[in-house]
Length: 108
Image (cartoon, rainbow, N blue to C red; front, side):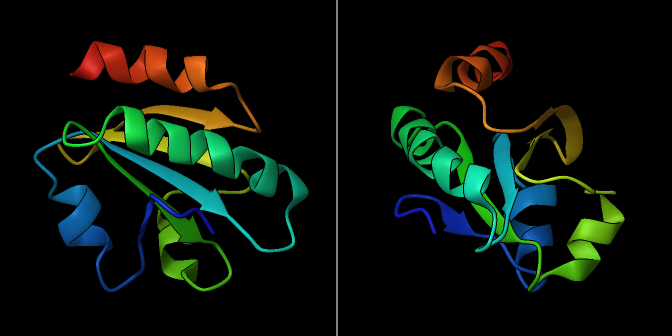
């Protein structure tokens, strides 16, 4: 698990993500997923870079199946970028920080 990212769960997803007044980066991951572990430092870097401007968090797909089902997440790592409760962008796979930053820079 990331050290800087918020843990999004079925209990807090609505308040932290869907009702957020700032853009939100949600990384869907699992313990057994190698590419997810490789992406974790990138998620931390994004959380640090956009601190105070963007929420950054992670959803464990095994512990939060209703969120996974609601958003049709079939592959991980899978990043959804929300703005005003709507999905603005989706990135599948282990991607460089610059790919995520270019999306966020357009939203803030």
